[in-house]
Amino acid sequence: MKPFINLIILGIFIPSIVLSQSKEELLSENKKLQKEINYTNSLLEEIHNHKTNSVLAVQALNKKINTREKIINSIITELENIKGFILLKTTELNLLNNELDTLKTEFSKMIKQAYNSRNRSDELLFILSAKNFYQAYKRIKFIQQYTNYKKIQANRIENKQIDISKKIKTLNTSKKEKNILVNQEKKEKKLLASEKNDKALSIKSLSSQENKLMSAIKIKKETAKSLQAEIEKIIAREIKKAKEKNNNSNIFT
Image (cartoon, rainbow, N blue to C red; front, side, top):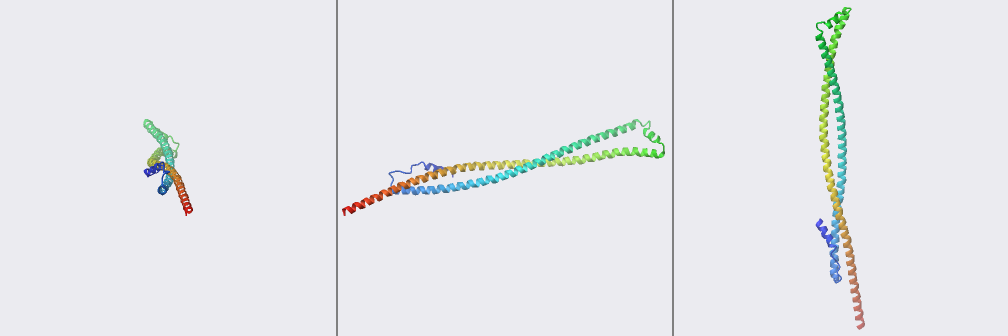
């Protein structure tokens, strides 16, 4: 379309009125000029429609970009929450590791002490030093319960470690999926922004063409007006001549 527009623009600089032209030539030129104006108007309407469509497309793209932005922000918020949970669970796991290490150390010391004092028979003396059978029984039960308690506590911590490790693994998987998703959304947003930029450039180009055509139409209308005035002058001269001729004929008759 641009070559046609350029031809139209160039055409407005070509002198259209030549004083020596006849009425027929001026009428012909005026008719040609009116066709050019009509054609230019049709081009202008077409460009205006393209521009309107492009503006609507940009508005639609803006909505899509805003939606993508909201999705990205939502996913980023979810990612931050996941990172917070991972940090919390990792801290909890570290505390459990420390607690388990403490229990293992205590248990190891207890075993070591029991081994080192096996000749002195501390536990046996502890039981035999009871005042009565009931107290001796209670002391035996205490030693058994204490040993079992340490084992149960260690098992509880280990089970909790396994549970937290699974949760951390699940959270890391979710974090990875969210990162992939946010990257996909960012790519889509980038593509939409690029499309929007192309449309904006198209609107700018169409606006420029629109302005050129409007200027061309204005000049052509002014030229047509001048042609019409020249034609009317010629017609007026012809009428005057005809009247003068008629008057002269009446004088001689």
